Image (cartoon, rainbow, N blue to C red; front, side, top):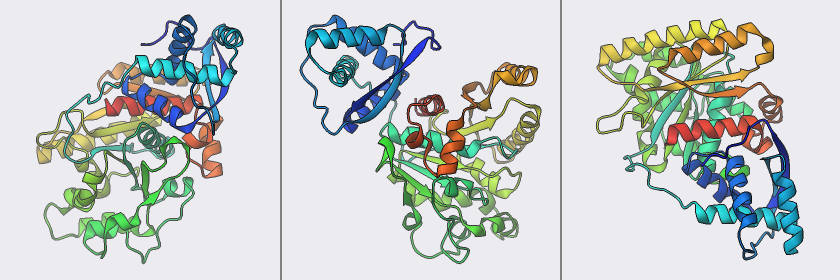
Length: 384
């Protein structure tokens, strides 16, 4: 349930909570399609009206922050004082009370065979699709889903941003596996992404410097359908090991993008919205021009191959209404499209840039910031 408060009329609250309680809260909020701050608010309001609750083990707690409506924080402190417990204990009890009163609704949908596949793309570079793909994958993993994040862009920004090195040109790589030129198992190339509440649930398949050659080699392949099926054939052995596979795509009209689009198509026996493409844009005209090119590419591919590709929606990244008419009118134009819808708006804040600079995952650097909350919104939308 979403509380009836103005989201802008809130104050920041910081407490220390054990990792297992933080993780359970994030997973449950995702399952119930609610914001963490609203879940905590509901919990505090219900807890302070209830009889004293059993003590919650808060040993080994680390920093947790959220935003509560003005006045709720004071009520919480007053109840804690009256009951003779610490503020941290009060927050923990309130969250535990909310969790107990809002059980997991799983399973929401029948479990599909293999991973659900989402690609993040646009034909314009610089819109921040890498940051959005990474943040969404982190949020999916934080919610308890085994998630594979693939750097499919030969520039390798995703790999570097997460503090890893690109694979050497002579090393095994995704591109070589796609072309049948690599020995060994693709899973041997996976790197665990550590930190935050998604540890042991998130892995990265790094980019390789040979990826720049992929389009040319796909174009000269003598196999009729290898251009479209190459990515799927390479990743097939991994699909049963993951719940979600998230692909950060290059800004390309070439064969590599075709094979990524084919990979996220709706497969036989799969629900219509189980997989698809998330289109990352900004509130300006060049993003719209790039989407027109991407849309043409999708329409050509679906028509030629008789397949369905679900366009999940737009994520408008780095939005700042203070930029004036260009930004606000462009956002309105994105909303007017209607289908696919605008599923999230990421505010232009320093968190993404700082995380990139520090080579840390966004949900580790600023786990309770506004941009991280939007990534959780995107994750909830595609995992529903």
